[in-house]
Amino acid sequence: MDVEARLTAAGYCVVGPAATADEAFRLIRNGHPDLVVLDLNLGKTIGYSVPDLLADRQIPFIILTGHSHEMVPARHKMRPFLQKPCVTATLLRTIRETLTGVKRPSLPE
Image (cartoon, rainbow, N blue to C red; front, top):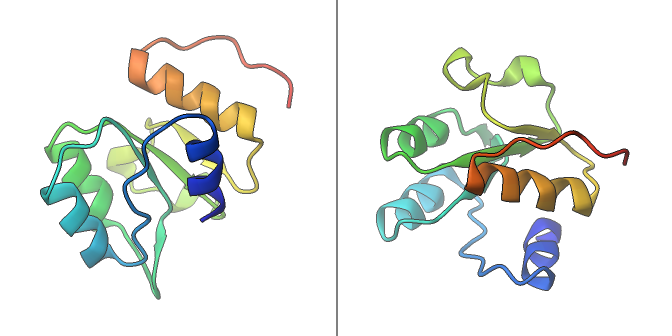
């Protein structure tokens, strides 16, 4: 919910959050989000099937999780990845870069 508050404050329209993989599937299938900020933890499980659905539907996403990058499935290792805790400016910059497809030099946090 912290991420939701930060994104709303930055002017983004947030759909969600989803606490389980089933909720995430429903939100994805009922709309076409411009971008998804995805935590690998969904409820009591790791939501490995959610990034697969997003990729199959060609929906850009950022993985924002407390897990290390090693937990990301091989198919998604090249996706934008941020580890919690994450500075708001870094999250917003990563969103802009992902939406525009432009990678800018990193700024110090």
